[in-house]
Length: 370
Ligand code: GDP
Ligand code: ZN
Image (cartoon, rainbow, N blue to C red):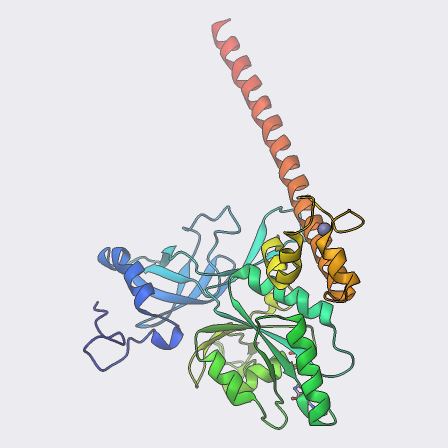
């Protein structure tokens, strides 16, 4: 198979995976796998050890069990660039290319590891409704998550048509801009179409996910970007022709205006997962102030020479920001502590098991020599 048809090369036709985000860097990384006769493809969905992969020759269903199945962080996920063995029966994913970014969430179950939700996301579109009071704390939470993943966040203020006038709207945008330094903030209305073109242009530049609370307008935005009903319910006929209805959820879509949208149900209620770096990035100005505190491990509560508290006193730093920062840090530490506790418990079980096995082996040996 030839990859000479990528943009920038002499050929005029596009590689069939370009609409799915394939670029020269992925191509370069894939060279050793191409040499082994493996096929590149983007994973559109995964369920029960099987995944759908879009390859240059269409969508194939492939087994993922081959790829380190024990570690939930290493399982294949939506957005991965997979190397598929085209000969295998069943077909299987041999490996996947190193992830540029990854969305991970803490699991509420017994497992201590995070769960990987989406890979290779470039833009995290944080949908925030302009109805009711703006929940700045919630925005910060989603931004932390976005930064942590490695994706670039964009805040999209939805339902702009419900804001009574342009002046109010500009104040709301300013408020959010202050909360999200360095993050583009965009007001849109799916109802009037305002701002949707700008959003589409952002989305055209890579792979995007939609984050935000329920009711924020994510599905509506997805539909506006896709230009039709994304989560359509398809009436499909099974072999005996009974016309059973099945909901097809396509978790990864190429957008008509360019770019890729990943919309997995699991991403919608994401929790923070070891997002300390992300939290730091959202509160960059606090981290910077903290660098000027007298004590290296200053908690910014009552320490003398605390630059953070001084900034609050002088009005330079809104107290709400500091509260929000503390809250997210605490939340994050709780998750990390829970994880550590689980990891320790697992380690203990492991040692006990090995101890028991060792003893059994010793006894077996003794038995043999007795
Ligand atoms: P999701 O839960 O984040 O996917 O939110 P939805 O897309 O389902 O939207 C929640 C509600 O907000 C629905 O009733 C939408 O019709 C409404 N909605 C979404 N976008 C807009 C908008 O631009 N303007 C107005 N007025 N309503 C909107
Ligand atoms: Zn301090």
